[in-house]
Length: 368
Image 1 (cartoon, rainbow, N blue to C red):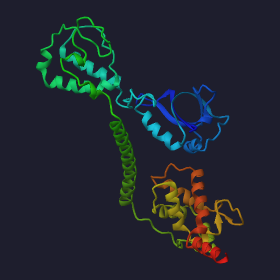
Image 2: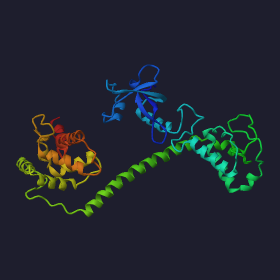
Image 3: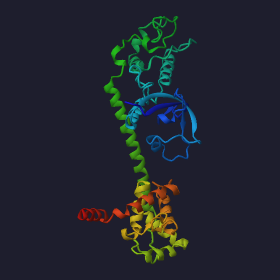
């Protein structure tokens, strides 16, 4: 099967946790055949995922980034799976080294363990720490250190001047020194427990995915709770005189649009329609427009007045919708382009609402 996507690691970019950033790119974004440099879109490109899925060709304003290919995939879905695997595996083709995790860093954790052991022995030795053990032996070593602190007599049974062999020294003994390696505590380590099985790997991936979903859900619920608390503390919105929603006729719309020239009326209407809420830009836009327009009136408009319809963007009610989206904490970061896209989608679907779609299908079948 021909590969169309690659999971790459950006070698020059490190996040706040000290981990190199990874993402998915299509093959067309590589610069040259060596696949060590790729093109990446600027921040102004709002939907990078869509560009990746559609294999959008690089533009002149894209930047070149140094990358390392972690793996290839024939489909975007397969690439997503490999991206999750790459978060804790240094090479997607390496079945031995499968314990790479974003946090905590294995080297940092091992350094902390060695520091604790040195403090417990009150050693004055200036000898350097032994080499960092392989990642797959890290967690058994942690368990051994835990047992060591729980059973201090086991430590006293080992001579402080015993010859210590580092886990990675491969048979080369170090000079007599204070015990600094967890493996020198006189405790045996089961050899088979250090290597993670495929079952544990899959379970770990699933747990991380579920935790990410829980975090996102909590974030949304937190914002919704803040909105409810603000509504509880705020005063009731007073409906402006003469404003009746939803608008049903062209005359109703024109009359309201004239009243919106008064800024106080505009603010009151914005506060009133913003109260319908919404959890996303599309959801909030759908709820707002349904609250403002009847379906029959919506059929006469689209955003830019194309195909013989009236132009909605020139009306003051457009600003009502946009400001209401801004007042919603869950959509407060919306820009005008995103609001226009959501409104265009809603006006396009107006011809299918209120039973219109079923009626068209029935008429089409009747003429056949």
